[in-house]
Length: 177
Image 1 (cartoon, rainbow, N blue to C red):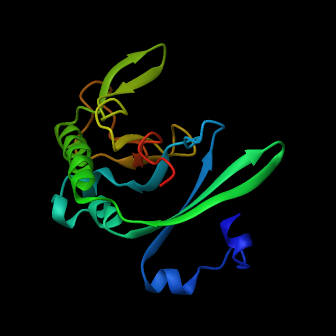
Image 2 (cartoon, rainbow, N blue to C red; image 1 turned 135 degrees about the vertical axis):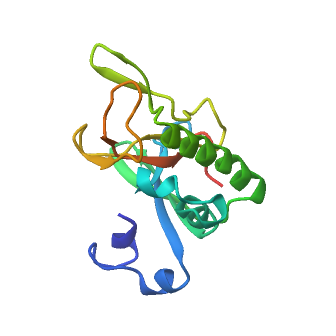
Image 3 (cartoon, helix red, strand yellow; image 1 turned 90 degrees about the vertical axis):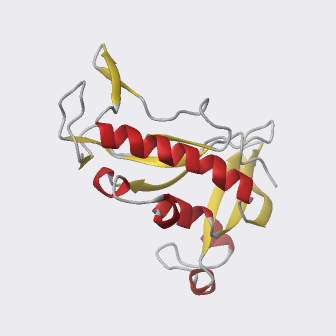
């Protein structure tokens, strides 16, 4: 939708934004003006995150970029552009996100991803929305079979690979700036 408004084909990148390393995120607002969903980032590979340090991590690199948030909201049955805002994450919030990253790295390194399995549903030890006001970790995969290899087998399930996950910004954090 954002590319359509800017007159750019869907499969085409915005050259000026690429050069400036600006990340575009589309946010759909609910009636109460809170984002309808959390905002996802690319999947992380379990084998890579355990070998990274925070300062060289993909997640920190993303968070240090400039963002262009494009806010939409339904008005009756029509999706309406509400606001467009350039934004940088404050340093204090990057430090909060680092806590989520560090906890995730520790969980993967120790092979303690799964907390329990109940009625076929796997519950993880990954930081959830209540862990942190800024970000959390949850699945970002086509289905449970969409996986990445693990550097250490999961202690509970003995799995050698696990469903793809990514870091998310909490919808309560990303309120319309």
